[in-house]
Image (cartoon, rainbow, N blue to C red):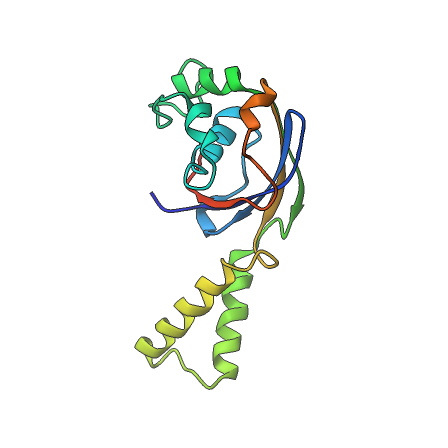
Length: 168
């Protein structure tokens, strides 16, 4: 599964963490203010945060119905997360067509032409990729997460960052 998000820890206080969640792919949409989504997002932090594996508790986070209340990810999320909220959306709504036009206009200003399909596509692909790596130009939000057990945050600290394919 492709990454959709870049998450970074902004603040940790007691049983709460504040995450910056930036889209890294146009299919990301908006982050969900649901506990299963946040649990999936935090699970993908395992390479930089050992506590992620314990938080997940060994369950399969890719259940049949990610929106259902009776699937294992939702049950686990309700157990370990007390509250989730989303705020401070930036660059939203994101106008993908306008972003594409800005890139195309920039390519034309550089003397490139769509008639040179190979050159145009390569240059467009490079610019499009750069756009989605620039947190100042892509949609982003702040996630406010309160944990059921403050001990679950052990090792989670400001500056930790990871990419995620979280959904739901």
